[in-house]
Amino acid sequence: MSHETTQTTGRMKQSPDHEDEILDLRRHQDPDRNRLTPVVQLPPDVALTVVEALAGLVRSAHREERTHPTPPGRLKQAQEFEEGDVYMLEPPFEGYFADRYLMDFYDTIERGICSRMHLHTGLRFVRMMTGPETTIRVSGLSPITVRSAAPGWTGPLTTFTDVLPDTPAGVHRDRHNVIVPPNSWVDMQIPRGVSHQFNAVGPHAVIDSVHPEESIETLREEMSGYRMMAQTIFLAKSKSPADTCAGVTAPDDSTPR
Image 1 (cartoon, one colour):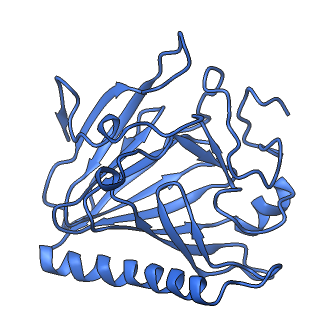
Image 2 (spheres, one colour):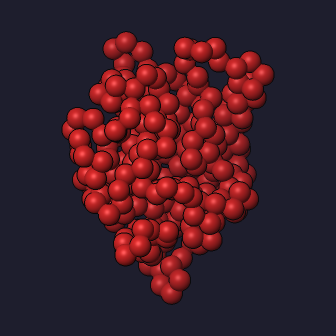
Image 3 (cartoon, one colour):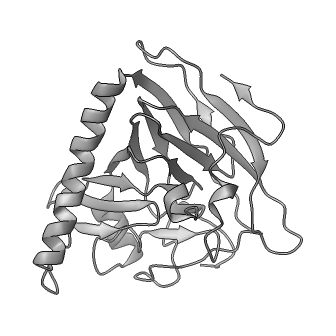
């Protein structure tokens, strides 16, 4: 298939195992929209306990990987991704094509760069969780559908549109943003091939992610194994400075929902 378009059937990647494949931003159009559901807001101490417990599993897995590296040819459960360290908590198996990952977010300000806009070769379901003094900026090239909040959600979400940074010369793309506030859980449904970008600001943020077609997408793309980086196609060649994604409002306008 052409490197200049995004399709929702058949293979999407040019090189199945390439972990930094770039799609032409000038030609990409999302085939659908992401959908975000506000779930619950928690007392700060409760949110911190949950987030740190889940992040702790990821950190423990990565310490174990450094001490006892996974042998070649075996499934590596502790992996690195653009937005944070990940741990495949539950792998797929014959007759069950889904798996579950935990991600311990990097702090965008601490490392000074943003994760890139990207898409995946299979659909995703993610639950994003924040603790105290931490937000997550969720972005996409298409407007994000914010669904009605589940019972128990008490505050508004801030949404705004800005300009995607560091695009090729002569290319303007709007970036649509939703801010996940501190001490909150939100769910997000990400269709296959739809652009998205997550950037956490603060030390306490995790994702609990389900990949409902992990085995299917890996076979469809003819990949050699389960690796989140290989199952990703980026829409930029390099990461942008942190100040392009760390703000929680547009430069001169914000719209609470």
